[in-house]
Length: 619
Image 1 (cartoon, rainbow, N blue to C red):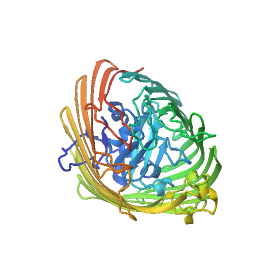
Image 2: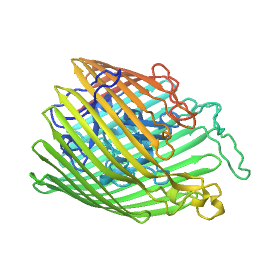
Image 3: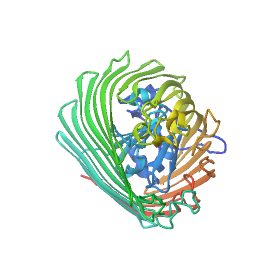
Image 4: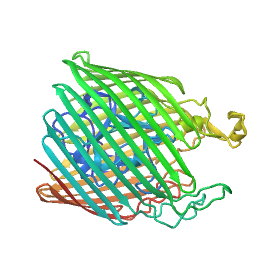
């Protein structure tokens, strides 16, 4: 199970029939980066940031990054099948394309499909995840309408450390990983390799209206490697290189319409290959007491190839340069200023595109007594969609040492994807960015390791990009006989999250309840695949060398091309540390074998048992 960590903030309260919940107290203040782009204590932020640390990741029963994220308050996922299938992470009702995903500060995902490619990222090589719930465009730019997921890969520990893990599960599933980290003088290095495979089940249900059903197994294989190398030439200065590469190969049910007849062929074995690379070279140095500079060059590649008779290719390359300075003034708080340059290139079977964006960022956070404030301002000047200015203003107030109030307001935007702009017979060059305005309020309580919190939010998004069937809005070209991309509607995303955590000796409990009202304001219809409520209940037990836990997730009914019924998933786990550094682990996922339907006509994973062995040690 994961543990959501806040210090001097809430983890989550109770709602309805959900019992109050879990997590061990932290004696020191939790430090996060995502809320302000610089390391800051969460008590200095008005933003809503949740942290999943390394211990929580290793103790989790989640089989994928998406499964880990969906147990967080305010997060829902939709998936076209099992763990290797295309996945959307929806924060506070936003779409997957309205979420920014960073790996070691490098933005990943497809700029053609507007997809962060969360399904390709390996859980085994992640050391920490920070989730900013709520708009973050004022710090991270385009597409952070719903939130930001900041993934930190494994770093070197002091000395020489080794770890390895292997697990085998039903349906021919396996997980293998190994890693090493070392420090020597001014150098540090961490590296790891991992492979995951699952033969899978049938991803589709019989009778789907598109003729995609095939009675076969739709599995996946994910191979990944990661490394971080650091050099400290002088105290207060560090040069770092980080690399992540992941290749995901997924079998899916589909139908191709291949030339020359373009008749459906009911393709029995349709494969999707996705490569995700993230590379960064950075320097961070202390120029004077309280004055820290950062410079970084990074590149991200998202390369998708799918099909059999005809292979569709969508390749995105992002080159990014950053220069940032942070000044911790003391009385006046912390000031951050940055300039950036982002160059994006797209290459597909049908078109090629590129755009450049020049960026300026200012951020100010501070504390005076029991009052803290946060203000951000960002300007994105794009060769495609013009200039967008976003801002955010928030404050928090400590009523008592245990109670804290916070409020935050801001605006955000999502840039049109290259498909929205350039895809033949669909893309429209003058389509506008989506724009959002949001406000949120929170109250949090923490004392003696117990925590509770309530957050309410309201986010209105206009110019939603989608299919426009009215040809009068499309270019006068026969290729647009069936419509085009357009700014077709507005959305209202509002709701509340109740959450709580409690420790009772060897036991820890956690619970959370999400309420969501996500609607199209023009039609009044609920947005697809968003549940009006979602509840999570977890319990963990640890005594001496033994551990066990259970997690219950209930997702309400969701609209789609057909109504998706409510679902309840129970995951169980147990562990035995039988020798120093050695742990025997077991998991039973979807223990009740619930018939899951993560999106219309797709099947979620059936019950699956895992047995594994883990070693962690060093000298």
